[in-house]
Image 1 (cartoon, rainbow, N blue to C red):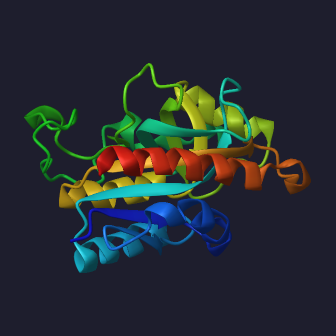
Image 2: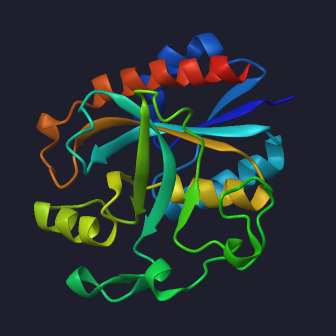
Length: 227
């Protein structure tokens, strides 16, 4: 029986993460690519869940920090993930679906203890919970923001922070994987190594290897907790 489906977005992330995760990859914990970006990640995650029937899902990869309190080269598990980019308008005129009261999926939650599981809030709007351990855990972070495009400038970051002032980092797969898990009633943990500051596109300054090494270490701890 597959206990944990470990998902990684890209071949680069898989190549750097696999050696660090090797001690926990076995019949109970399987590593697979989910694809880059929210569309591929949602479709591939749904396919893998239907085929492999895991008990839980762990998403691991890199992210850019929005909140400077997160340390570049360190890794965090996030308590909540939101979707940026589904809504109306663009640039400074963009309004998220959540702020408009729109629902991305009208069905009820499959998880009774889910914070969004009450009748009034069972539909999926713009954000989803994911497990992150105790709030005192130094690896615990708050809101991860998923978009179809990463921030290209400090101006982009400011605009996103205006709409989501709690956002601490941005990625391109978290919400998609969370939605696929939500629809199947599976618990999800998201671990992201912070490789750069969001909006900084000079990859010469990014610390991808260090971020993924930290993400592998944190993921090993999470897999040990689950066993």
